[in-house]
Length: 327
Image 1 (cartoon, one colour):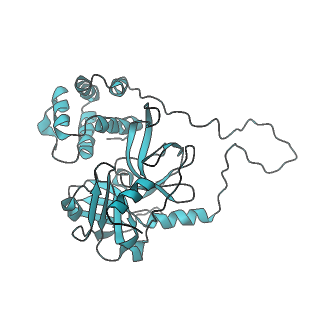
Image 2 (cartoon, rainbow, N blue to C red):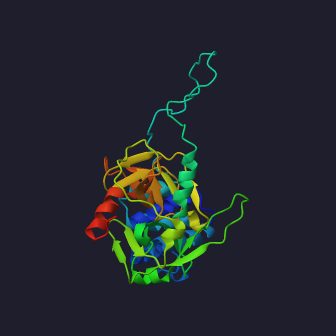
C-alpha cells in the first residue's frame, strides 16, 4: 500500500477510535468483509495497518468507514474522513518567510524572514551523535517500532511497541540501520534486551524502559533525560525509523502546536514504525517520546487537529523516578 497522507491519518484516526481487537473485528464485519482474512490477534496498530493495506487494495475504504461510522455515529472526524476531508492544521504563525518585504539595495546580506534560521555548523554533528543512540525495534512477526538508549544501558520506547517482558524477549534492536553517504545501507548491528534484569512499563503514559544485554552505551552512546521547557512555535526534530525503514530525521514544517508537562503536539512528519522515537528541540535536547499521530484532540481547547504527539520529557522523568530510576 502506498502510505499517502490520507491513509496514514486514517490509520491513526481508526486506532484512536477503535483500539480493541474485538471492536476492529466488529467493524470489519460491519463493512461486509471477512474477519478471517485478517490476523486479528496482534497489536491494534499493526492490525489496522494490515486491514487498511488489504481494504485499500480491494477498493473498500468507503465500506470500512461506513462500518466505523455505524459503530461511532457521533464521531465527526470519521464522517469527514468518509468524505475525504480532515480538519486542517491550525495555523501557528504568520508568514515566517516574508519575501515581499522591500529592501535597501545597498545592503548585500539580509535575513529574509521573520524567523532566525542560522545555526552553528556543529548543530549537524550534534544531531548525528544523537542519532547513534536511536534503533529500530524489530519482532519475529515482522512488526516494528523505534526507540533509543538512555544511560546505564537502558532502552526507552512506547508501551504499545514493547508491552511486556515476553515482547521484550522476542525483540531485536537494530543499531546503525541507516544509509551511508554513498546511499547504501550499513549492515545493522543487532542487540538483544534483558527484561529479567530491568523491565518497567506504563500503559497510561505509553512508555517502556528495559535493560539491554551488554554495554550498548559504549558503542552507541545515550540520550540524556533532563527537564526542558517546551513552548508553542518552537521546533520538534524527530530521529526515527519510519515504516520500519532506515533511520531518518524529520525537520520540515516541524512547529510545536501544543505543550504541557504531559504531552507535546507537533507538525513534524512520522509514519507507522516511528513510535518510540526521540523528539528534540533545536538545541538537540530531548523534549518528548513520540507515540501517536493523526487527528488528535488539543488538550487546551478540546478541538481536533492533524498533528503528531509525544510524551513530554517531564512526564517521563517523573514516571521513571517513581519506579526507582534516576540519572
